[in-house]
Structures are given as C-alpha cells and as structure tokens.
Length: 164
Length: 263
Image (cartoon, rainbow over all chains, first blue to last red; front, side, top):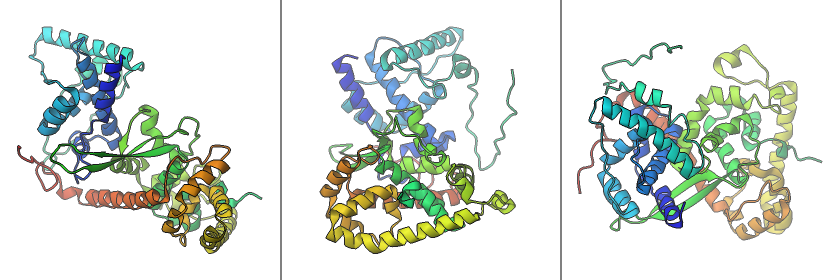
C-alpha cells in the first residue's frame, strides 16, 4: 500500500457504524435480520470495510460476497452514516450500490468479478479472504435463494444437508 | 511455596468455591478481566463526534493484546479469543464483545461442564455424576473439597490483610497482587478506590516484578477495571432480559427498531 492508501485504510478501519449509546445498534440489527451470531456479524462488518477500501482503490470492478453485501445493504439504510459520515467525511467520494440486471452475461460478469475481488483482496491485505465470509463462487452464486419470511406466522426448518 | 491462587484462573477459583451456585455471568466476567489483566486482550477508548452537531461519545473496544500471540488459552478462555483467531486485527465494541462471549459460551451448562471442567487442573476436582450430566449440577471430589478449603483460607487471608498492607507497605502488597493475578477480582474486602491511589506505583511495580511478562499491563488503572466490571454486568443483564422477552419482539418495527426518519 502507498502511504495515501495506508491512511485511507486506517480511516476506513476506524470508521464506526455503530452508536455505542444505542440500545439496538446497527450490528444488533444485522444479527437479527440475518440470524447471525454476534461474532459473525462483527467480522462481516470488518470484511465490509475491507471491501469498501478495495473499491476506493478504484482499479477494478468488484463484487462482494453475499455476507458482505448484506452489511452493505443494511448500511445503505442508515443514510446519514453511509452517505455523510462514511462516503463524504471518510472516503471523500460517493460509492453507489449496483444490483445485477440479470441474464447470463451479467452472471458471467459477476462470477469473474467475484474471483477478481478475492485476488485483489489477497494482493492488498496479504491474506486470503476468510472462507466463511467470502465463500467459493459455487456457494456465492449457487445458494442465493433468499426470501423474507414472517417468523411470527411461519416456522423455518432446515433441509437435511445435501451430500455430494 | 506456591500460592494456591496462582494455580487457578479467577473463574476456576470462583467455580471451585461456589460450585453449582457460581453464576455464568461472573465466570465469564472474571475470565474476560483476567485476559485483559494478562494483556492477552486490551481495551481501547476512543472519543468521537459522529456529526459536528453531536456531543462526543466514548467508544470502548476490545482488541488482541501484546501477549495474544504467545498465550496458550485454557478451553474456557478460547471462546474469548476465537474472533481474533479468525480476524487478528479486529476491534470489537465492548458491548458487542460481551454479547459475543455470552453467545460463544452456549449457556451455563456448556460453559461449565464442557469447557471449564475439561481443563486438566479442574477435572480431578469435580465428580462426574448423572445429575451433573443431565442438569449441570456440580459435586466436588475429596481432592476438590480440600482445594476448596485451602482457597477459602487463602482468599480470607488476602481479604483480611491486603487492604492494610496496601496502606502500610505498598511494595509487599504489590508483590502479593502480582502473585494472585486476576484472582484479585474475587477479593470482597478490596476497595478499588484504595488501589486507585496507587495506580502509577502499581503499574511501575507490576512491570518491574513481572519478569516473565505474564502481567505487564501498560497504562491500565484499577478505576478502569471497576468500570469494566460494572459495564460487563449491565450488558449481560440487558442481553439476557432481551433474550427472555424475545418471543414478543419479532415484529420489524417495535420499540427497538424501525425507521428513525430523515434529517
């Protein structure tokens, strides 16, 4: 990393999404809405910050893992934190979120970008992206069938594990 | 002669002394504070103004400390370090860290029976019974009862002598504190404000005495420990209360959620 990049990374790392005085923080919401553990949520936020930093380097189009994307989606709802405190005050630029337009071409593009993202991650941070937050492309793009379910009215029962 | 308190972590001592009456909250709290005292974990306080119009807010983080890399954790300590094993440079807000440890403990029965009792120095002290297996109750062996008596006597000795010793001979008092490490949190007669007076002397002396680097805290104060102990309790209690009320808190927009509107 160049000194400028290093400075930017420290600023992003030190950027805090959570309000410590809030009874129900951003991280609490992330835990509840995704049924994650606190440990996983906290680590996913750390990975989200790394992803945002990689985007700021601006050399490649990048694609996040679904886990990182969930952090991003939720952060976008906290508009002041996202646009003012992070984009304007910390990064000095706007970062827009662009969902897929669908179709085979887009699918190929995102597959490629996802693989590229993990390569860039390794080259910048000198470590492999953690597998539980940055799973393989097969899992990243093969298991995304999510639906919002009212748990007051429905039970959620896991399917028996698929065995190869 | 080895001080018996030096043999056990504060959570282990507390469990031997109180058996089934030991609260998981206390066991977790003492373990966390002991790891901070050992510099396996460190705390970092940051004051920030998220917005120029806001007043400054205090953010307290838990990080891996300078002894994290070399420390060999006991089974019950591993759950406190797992996040750092996976993400070494992560900084976790105190509140989230406490909740994380409570979740990782997976309940009192699991934490005590599967993690604490599994340690080689605790295994011979507790009987393996059907009641224990089913309900998590604890029963000491003969050896365990003998250790319990000895621990009780030693704690009593420290409770009776340490407060006076701190006033009269701080140097010797500090040597005693270093010997028992995190077990100092278990002393009921110890007034933290008394130790506060000696903060700087304590730090300097502990650093001088800790040649093995086991206890070499940088710049901590007892005042902070007192605050952290209280903070742990309030986060734990709030988390447990929220978990108890969770059946009525499934809606998306209740008192703790929903949209805060636009500026």
